[in-house]
Every structure is written in C-alpha cells, then in structure tokens.
Image: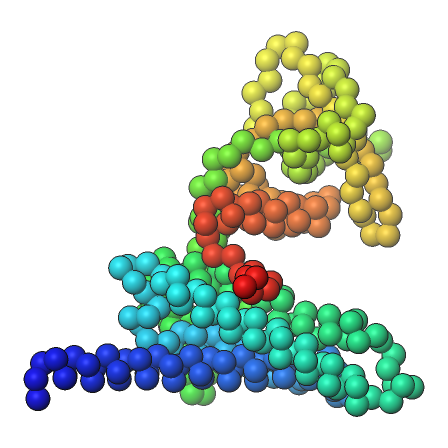
Length: 315
C-alpha cells in the first residue's frame, strides 16, 4: 500500500472519529435539554430532578472534552472551530429545551396551564442559560491549561469517593477568569458612599459603585464641593473639590438613594476589591456582585475572550 493511500485512510479515520464525537456531543446536548425541562415541568420537580439536570450538564461538557485533542487545540491555542462546535451544541440544547417545553405545555389541559407558554419556556431554558458564564470559564481554562488539565477537571471521582460537585469544577475554571480580570488596567469612573452611625459615630465608607462615563446624565444632579472625605485609592490634593452624584441602589423591596463621591480607579484593582467586599459581606453585596459581573463582561469583550452568544449568527 502506498504512503498516499495510508495518508488518505488516516484522514478518513480522523474525520469519522471527529464526526462521531460531534454526534455524541449533540446527543448529550439533547439529553441535557430534556432534563432541564423535567426539572421545571415534571410533577415531581424535586431536588432529584434538579440533580439529574446537573449530571446531564456534566455529561454534555465531558462529551465536549472528549473531542479529539488535535481538534480542540491548534498551534498551542484553543481551536476557534472547537469553540463554534461548543456554541452549536449549546444552541441545540436551548432549542431542544424550548421545543420540549412547548410540547409538554400543549399536552396540558387548559386548567393546568397556570403559566403562559413563553413563561414556561423561559423557566425551562433558564437551566441552560445559567451555565453560560461557567462554560466561558471552561473554554478559557482549556485555552490556558490545555486538554489534559481540562479533562482532569471533568473527571469523575474515584470509585467509593464522594461525587465532585459541579460548583467545585466551576470554581476551578473561574480561577482563570479571576487571573485575567485582575490584569485590567482600564480607568473606570466609580463612586463611594459614606454613612455615620449616629450612636457610635463610626464612619463606614462603602463602594465602589459603577457610574460610567455618562454619570452626569444618569446620576444627576452632580455638584462639586469641598470633599469631606477622600475616596479610597484616589490621590487627593490639598483643597481639592470632589464631585458628588446621587446613586440609586435597590435594597430589598426599596430603592435607596444617597450621594457618592466620584473617583477614577483601575478596572483590575476594582474587580479584586469587589471580590474582597463580597467575602466580607458589608453593606450591600448585591451591587458589588453586579459591578464585578459588569467588569468581567467588559474584559471579555475587550480582550476577545470566549463569549457564548445566546443565538446562532444570522445567515
């Protein structure tokens, strides 16, 4: 047999191996979609049904990791084609879950249709969409750590040991994202608020809160006055006047408005600061969590990190 024939057979075998792996990924996407619908619609919408959804999601991700190594990585980096294959499988899961929810809803009697079709579909696909950030982290982890480490992060626990929770795997992938975001050097506009306890006189400076470049239009009225406190991490010159803007924040069922002093900081340092504040859980962690998420999305888009789109591109 000539070397040409051997080469052709090898290419054919590789193509068949890749296609079989893609087919398995699609099958796992559909299984995950069905379990996501089960977790919301089945009469036994229990912890067991929710756990099955997580297991199905894990099998889906393991199927992606099982794609041929030569397809996942090209020239030392993640293959853009592999990212697209993953996106396609994610879109398949969403579409299948939506169709499954519609079929189940149609089989219900009118008396049992306590929610609209659109609401039912939204609730069912939430289990799919909620994994987006974790999957983006997983792709980053694959790109930085390589195929072996990525597959290890998805490996089942040894027999006889407790199963590895999905959150533990996601935390491993997220460590890469935190490293990336900590490098951010973009100047961003934020604000800090200050409260004084009338009984103890103790002063609490809280923030940072996102203002954005258009803060004079969105957080007005804005005024300048002699600063009675300097925002953290901002160099204050003698006699400097700071700008103050009114910041609105949801606390429970109410909206609270308070003045914040405006300052400029580095995005990476603020990302880390938000993480520390969340751990301490002082004042309102919800605002810092949202801000941290905003900085994360901004970094991804600015540095072409892997962003899983909600829908396939228009043809």
